[in-house]
Amino acid sequence: MSIEDNLKVIKDAKLDIELLRRKNEKLCETNNKEINNFIAVITDAEEMLEINLKESGEKKLECKLGYCSYWTMPDKWEYDIPKLINWAKEDDERQGRYVKVTEEFKKAQLKKDYANGYLNVAIDDVCKEGLTITKQKPKFNYKISGGI
Image (cartoon, rainbow, N blue to C red; front, side):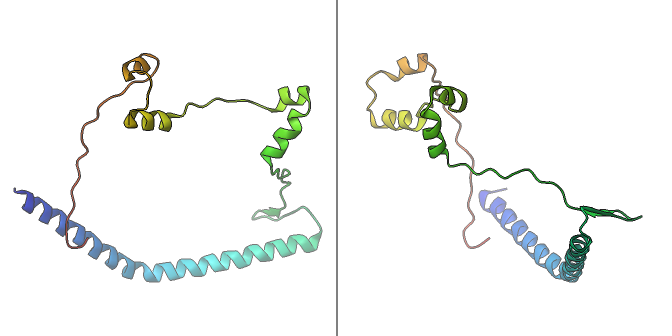
């Protein structure tokens, strides 16, 4: 098959997929409406359960079918990291206990400097120190003009 034949096969298959998706949407529309109705019923029933639980003053209500209850939730912690780091650095013991210092290598800067010829050392020397550069195969790609 020629390139044109293969592209036509792909284009036709994509069009068939879109047509089937539209058909699915129409066929599933009724079911989706019913699902949404059931979701609304569940939401209403959940609200009534919570109202019953609140009015009872209990933490848990049980019956033969199950129960409803309030879970004890842990406290929510929100951190302002820069302020906390400054607080921890005010005291040597706190700094050692709460502050972790990390180093990060600026990979993007190395690539940029190499591409622009700004490296003061040969790239071979850098490669010996922990960099491996591997050429990659080109990635296959295609485009069909005129829709889909």
